[in-house]
Image (cartoon, rainbow, N blue to C red; front, side):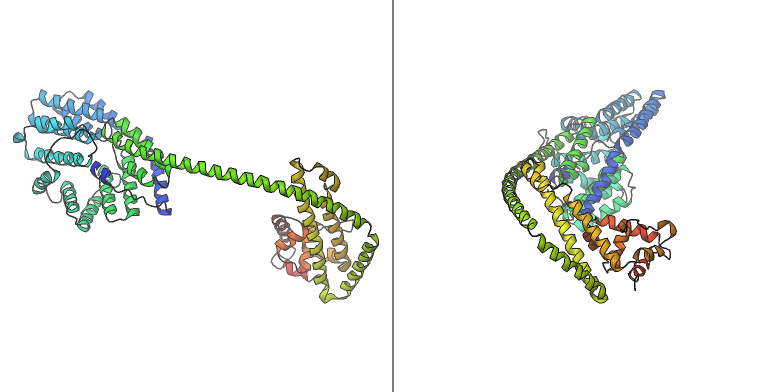
Length: 532
């Protein structure tokens, strides 16, 4: 596994939706990893108590080997203790096969942890291969094969020894192992990959995956090698999929010596620096807890890439800050110019107001003309609604324009840039007064055209919802449906005319329709028929 980890290509997959979903699923597993670790610790504590309570050396040996197997991916130090204890028990009962079995396992532990000198001393100097039984010889060759692969894969390690190539041990094992065994299939998969027969290797790899459950420790290992095959096919999403499944399997089995999560972090580094750093930090914590020297060394190389990514992001942030500073300076200049022009416009408006005050006669004439227009509209039923709406929209536009102008002036005044402007224009309450005058004009005009509107409108409502204002005005709800009577169906248009928010209009309409005497569906059509 370490060999392919170091040799993997660094083409990161895009963080698309499918990959994001995989990473979120992995985050869920990682959030509960302490629970799996606690469960594993409880199981291992049970082994310790059982061994302490066992007196027979042979039984203690078997228990020690089982405990060492469970500790193997969880704690280097504890595995080493149990294997050395097993060696001592084998010497105590003078069982040479059991001693060799424990020694081979100890050599394998050192090889996987990167203690190549200790592994070489045990596997090549302390084991008499001529005395090994057939099962032990298979185990011995399997460990040497794994040792040779790791040595070849971790070319950056200072500690290196001259040992036979992995292919030599693989050839011997393929002649010894049953063809249906998982080890035979794993060896065959590796051989097919070396020979470039990737389709066949993929078939064997998937056969291995189908032979184990996702919660088994071997599933995580097979999933990792499947991800490497997908990479050779340039299937980057599938590669990420199997890496995530492998990492999840490591979490479930409380494995602390792993490669999958580190590789996931490495692949997402260009697109998700924060998540990559979080994954690497978890991997580093587990590697330090495991206490082998190989895995922290591998992870430290990737941490340097993370540091580089953070530096690039900080550089981009610095450039963005400079751009924002320039934009802010430009905005300040623009605001200064706008302030100057607004003050000039204010002076012009003051002169215009004086001129308007001198034109009372013209305004009186305009009012007379407006009254005449009302009479003409009342007489012409077919066109009255068109002119009324045009009149109302004009008044509404005046209210909106006045309010917008007030808001701009207020902002300037609140910034302390135009105090004199506030005194001259006396803007406080002006838009509200204009709007109230508009409502009064609207109510007077509409009720003059449709004097029975309120009574007929109330007749469409339930008793508790009826309202008859004493001051001869319309309520807000009646005003909204008065516009609907005039043909204004769009709520947005109504909101614009009455100077309300769209949500306010909607809420009023819903409230009235809910009180409709004959149901809400045809209520607006009934309102339009009032006065006809």
